[in-house]
Length: 132
Image (cartoon, rainbow, N blue to C red; front, side, top):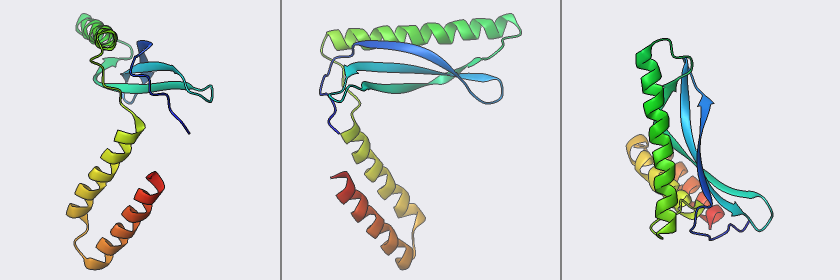
């Protein structure tokens, strides 16, 4: 599958998704346009702050307003960086490289016995050949 190499973000919009225990997660969708196969080329960024699903007092409403305002400001910052050519696209190639590096660090701590270490090395070899 070929992904578009557009460094420019066409749009960045926040949205809410229901989470656990009465909190809502906030995501920002980075939209780059269409891929050559006609599907949307986008990436979702997760914000660590959460919103109350049903705020019951003034403090929770102010918190929700502050978090949503931060999400809107982050979207505007992304668009400004894109217009000024300072935006670095989160692409799939770097995600795959980071996955292998993360797995190596994890395996160094997890697998201490030679048999399990050898099994992990085999999995890493096949994963690298699959990724390319």
